[in-house]
Image (cartoon, helix red, strand yellow):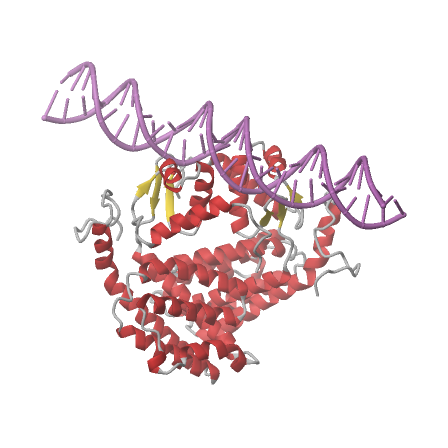
Amino acid sequence: MISSPRRGKQLADKVYQDIKDDIFEFRLLPGDRFSENEMAQRTGASRTPVREALFRLEREGYVEVSPRNGWQVKPFDFHYFEELYDVRTVLECAAVRRLCELENLADTLQPLMSLWGVPEDQRLRDISGVLNLDENFHSELVRTAGNGEMTRIHQNITERLRIIRRLDFTKRARIDATYDEHHAILETILHRRVEPAQIMLKAHIEASRNEVRKITLHMLYEARRQGSGDTGDALPAPASGSRAGA
Amino acid sequence: MISSPRRGKQLADKVYQDIKDDIFEFRLLPGDRFSENEMAQRTGASRTPVREALFRLEREGYVEVSPRNGWQVKPFDFHYFEELYDVRTVLECAAVRRLCELENLADTLQPLMSLWGVPEDQRLRDISGVLNLDENFHSELVRTAGNGEMTRIHQNITERLRIIRRLDFTKRARIDATYDEHHAILETILHRRVEPAQIMLKAHIEASRNEVRKITLHMLYEARRQGSGDTGDALPAPASGSRAGA
DNA sequence: GCATACCTACTGGTATACAACGAGGTATGC
DNA sequence: GCATACCTCGTTGTATACCAGTAGGTATGC
């Protein structure tokens, strides 16, 4: 939308995006530690914009700082992801309710319907493409409900969950299921059947959550092994029995 | 909990709180413009921690920056507040549902019950005190439900709504109503009657929202008149019919 | 060999200096 | 009188210099 009006903060924004990408692409692994100077060199900027970027990332839950002891990428906290999934479910169910109460429901839902109602042979088979599409489905569901603030919060949660969802979606089994379930949910909303739609949505999210539950640990160790591997305290040691907490 | 471990960012934190207080206490009015240097002088710090504080406030929705043109306190946007109220309702209703499904419900709710179940003659009459208490009721309701992330989001929304709720609560009529309604809601939750409790909670929030709807504009102009009054573009002109958007 | 105390190197926190850009006033041409 | 071009000043954006505190290695005493 807005393109030219805001030119400021070019560097800080770029650094922010760079670091975020590094995290999402597992060039920076959960638990990795780094200093501001290090990151400044890495990005070619000075400490000032780097710090600004890091503070933003900190507030968004991706990194954390120990006052005089450096920064680190936040280690995976599965309990935390579970909570995020719960909040996501709550928000999307609320969106479904609001959608079912809309006047011009059919028109509003038309774009989504045409996307997910395609016949089987026209479905997208690309895995990461479907991941994007799936994210888009849920985001649009909420956005269409019309509450801007709710949309913003949901978007934020989606982003935070993206990093683990990237570890999933290797098996295409869920691709067809995703199409089917999305389509069914939309149909049910179209018939203004609030509770059935909510139940289906919950089950759909639950399925995705379960996939993630199964796969994350294994994939993460994989990603670690392929990474630089110079950090020793990134995660609770892999089954070495030296977990500190319970 | 943690007290000594994190000593850093003392200044930035202080400045953040100072500015936030200024906004909440209407020493800085919605629409007021200021520069970083100005704020640095005002707080006695240098620009660096001031900027950090301002960025935090920006992300939280209290101020906004025009790239090379200074900062301003975000003007009131009542549509935005409406949206926040909606999200708040969604979250609290979800919390009620989760509470009703808790095992040791009676124990969990005990603290809240003893607070709001007091006989009439022991009720707090102090107006701003009740505002705090009311906020606390809703926060605790969500917190008790057990989802940390949901609690954090709700807390953030509560804070953002606080600034307009401060303009309300001048009439004590709602004080008794608040006590009565809170107590009734808790009782209903205790009996695990999900939907009735949610309906009551919605109505309760709606009442508060309606109070705020009636009173804000008048009170805000009042606050403005008492303030410095050196800004001309703080608000949509009072009924001059020059609203830009629809 | 071990514990302890010191010391160094590096960390983030803060202040300041410099650069680039924009808004708004002012002068100028008509 | 009015429009336009320019120029100045103030703004944020960025880089750098300085400060304070901590962790961890090292040397020393036992």
